[in-house]
Image 1 (cartoon, one colour):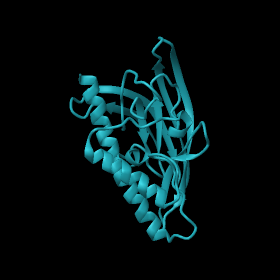
Image 2 (cartoon, one colour):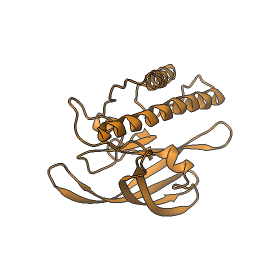
Image 3 (spheres, rainbow, N blue to C red):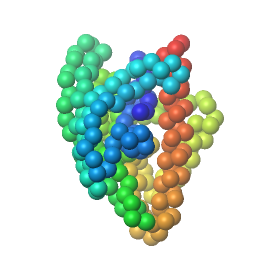
Image 4 (tube, rainbow, N blue to C red):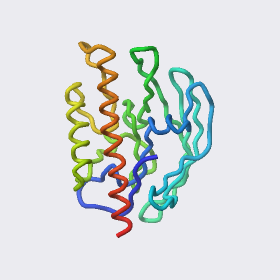
Length: 207
């Protein structure tokens, strides 16, 4: 369901140094279902080995325009401290030009919309990239570099100054059809970034 990493690096903590909840992937995998109450487990695995690297329990209660998700899990910090976490995260939608909605998390720490939430190593609560001031680890793979630059370039054209997965507001002057197309382009570029970040972390752990 997103990136997983272990260990520490110098400087700011990165988005790859923990677990990631990607709302679009949760929807595609039907773990979150609009109009339904659903529950189970969210599991993170290495794509190459199938090894489980993390899991949490969840309950998703989604209406047609809003909802909430309960997360339950145990985390262990690097110093051995363990904590049982059990809390709710709100979800809401923004309208699409042809009658649908786009779903967003409401970050429990900032109150802002986000498409992705992160649980960095050492943290206890899933929250947005901005809440943890997460950085992006520089990558050597050209395709990812291009996708990352493209994502930020597309975000900039819409007047957004956030990072990967952050909410992008529709400019008042832009047509809904154009806005929706631009969002799809942004999300497509960000999916490439996510895939390569996960592969990079797995290579680091294997070495």
